[in-house]
Length: 429
Image 1 (cartoon, rainbow, N blue to C red):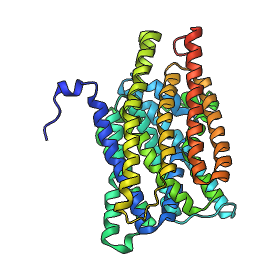
Image 2 (image 1 turned 180 degrees about the horizontal axis):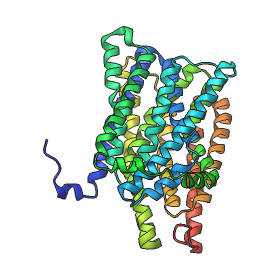
Image 3 (image 1 turned 60 degrees about the horizontal axis):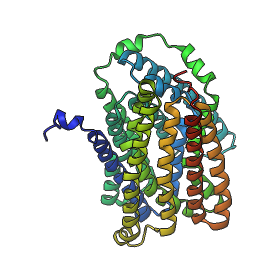
Image 4 (image 1 turned 30 degrees about the vertical axis):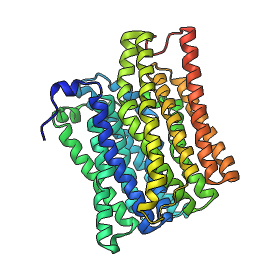
């Protein structure tokens, strides 16, 4: 296959299209895994996998201390030596935090304070490697390498599904959650091998020799308390629902919830990869160099792209899932049309809210950004508890719509007030 011509690579839609293709391939495989689990292992196993998946999503934030938030902005425009040093110091903090967390959790298990989950060793390996991969993924995006970041994500979140499901179909004795987790772990190892080839031109030896900047680490930790709560809030809004479903209902209901969430989240991830992530450095540079007018132009264009891509994809996903999936799986994947519709509506609203969140981030409005996300997380939990108890799984979907709408309104209000008053923002003084 011939590489794309320079003219094609310069086209404004080239990189979004490539990122969308890579993420779509990975998400198709991940959705295929959920369908495979539902059909051959049972919907309860989907719930169990979803709980592990949620832990893998929460772990990087819980041990992240909010430092990645500032690191992402600092990496924009840095040369490889400086960027590599910052990323290395960030990873050292992550490894130390994971080690402490591991000791604490192990002690609690030995004291019978918490139950020892099945497949605990695979889960521990996945959480450790996923946390490091998460830090590196965000760093690559901030360095203007979203395609490299998404290729690595494809390796660790999509490609491994082929052997996991393929060997399971060929050999019934491998139709187990343990084998699925084993394949996931191998993919994470392969992810880091591929990363080395992507950064082969970086001065890795010089980066390794450079003194660890403990002052930078400590200053970022001291100044990130509110941002840490913000990060916990964002992660909580993404993953806590499944744990609330599990506590209020049962593992089977958790499996149904995770199945529908996987479909809706696929749309969120695709649009984020194709539009939102690519706009982070663009918005930061626009505000630094072009001021309010250029920044508003870029943010408006981002919102329009989100709607133009997200709404049709959501409609397509609903049609395929409700009318096509049951025909291909003999009814083993229980699709609830109203629940899926609510989740997809929430996804489109959430994507618009995410665009405004990047608007706040690019202008350095860290305090209102964090307060909105913390409040949104609390509101999401309260809405889920109230509506799940009253309406079951449909209540969970309704809670997602209301939570996303609250985020959109709050972020829009802050940006509108800031534009109206004309106050200077922190990143420009």
